[in-house]
Length: 161
Image 1 (cartoon, rainbow, N blue to C red):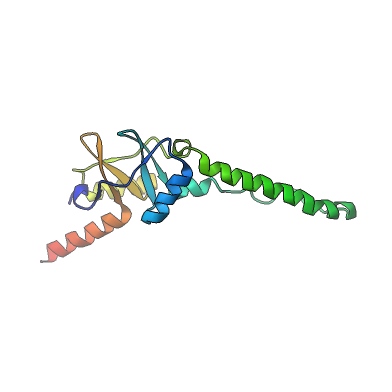
Image 2: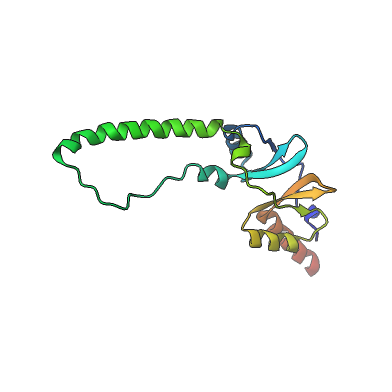
């Protein structure tokens, strides 16, 4: 069975200069895990939930132990207030950044005529959950792990009949 038989045709896409906020909105509303990123008509990358979540990663606890002195106890709430203000500012900046700044690239793709087994091998090797599907160098669809599982199940049913 080839990829074209199980892919989602005409996938939802986003333009490279659109904002991360817009990408997040589309991902949430469409209940999808990622979007092909386009530069007009050309596929140039992917943005996924993981790419967006990685922007929110925070550093772990400090390596050194710090115990406050009595005077610093008063200072801690003030310092934490300013840290929170910086964090809020950083979060609002993330949403206004262009998708291009966080998309995954170079883009890993598969051809519509390739088999679902080839798609599964590629996804496992690259550690990805979705692949843009090309036909004659143009985005024709997207295939996910769930599509492949469904295709394998359908293939087994067809063989049993």
